[in-house]
Image (cartoon, rainbow, N blue to C red; front, top):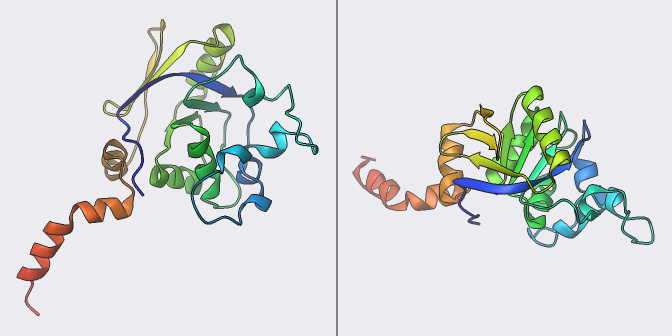
Length: 198
């Protein structure tokens, strides 16, 4: 399915300053029965967001009215654990379009790129600066420029580059997943097949 095109995102950030967040914490296993990519956002960080009686936990960051935005700023080693795509479905469905961290689990990072969430890996030092900037001013804007592969903080001269696979970058810019990419090349594939001797 096509996703939102991603070029430049300017948004405030939601700080989740916790390290080693695994996919079971992002979306608990009991919510993996659904196969359609919808309604997962309501269970994002379910056990951290709600008590057993479904009362929102006041001290959890997603329940705070102070922080909002399309960028989740996470601690080191985000997305470890099982390879479930549902974790990224939940992040996307909740409304996040980018996750910034100093380190991502490889499978989670690839799932993000396949599902329309940009995983931006930066240095631990720059991540700390972002956390401090958000604490000081929750409405501070972060700018994630996929074209130039650069992250910046409003009102701060510091910027930092990030890496991304060129193919995945092109897909993010166009809002494609792997199947969309192939479908977009349908005519080229057909022409190639017609010219191929059998």
